[in-house]
Length: 246
Image 1 (cartoon, one colour):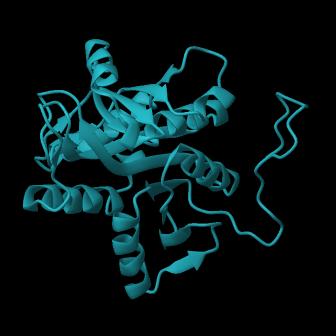
Image 2 (cartoon, rainbow, N blue to C red; image 1 turned 120 degrees about the vertical axis):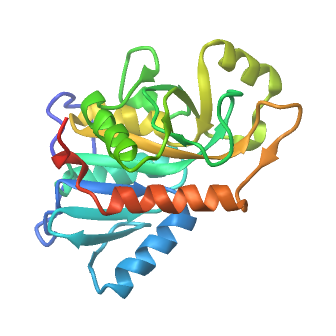
């Protein structure tokens, strides 16, 4: 994939001669927890595996790939770039988020419509103000799929950060006033990469913790979080989103 828009770029992602093309659609599990579960299932099903630097890649069938993990904006962007070079044209991120809005609770499913960058990767893909979003067509199909299976989804703006242990109450209050609903580490960067490379991208984020109260409320081990996470994963894996009718 030669980057003809900027001749000053030294390295461009590419598919090597010995690498096979992957299906156009795939699910990108950035968190090791879900990636380990789903890759284990792919192994059990004897699905075809491919090499993916510092991550894993399986073909569920000839129409869908499963990739991950890749925590944080730089690694997630690096992995997405390679997936695109291998032939990916439609990628859905599956991850977790911390709820900044009182309307979101542990176990809720967020299909965000807007991204705000607090990470350092997006600026390399855009000279505009660091605010981007998903492909609305693909996002709409994801929402419709969940609705058809009686799973409620929420929309909102997600702020992505590089340093979850350096989140300040004053900063979060300001973000909430700007309309930010949740926080993660990868979404805004992947929106920027997808827009730059011209592919379809959307995300499904399950609320893992609440940070809108007086103190942090984690829910990673709660039954509702695990149940909703498993349900959302299976809906994404077992359906070809790009083929859903709008």
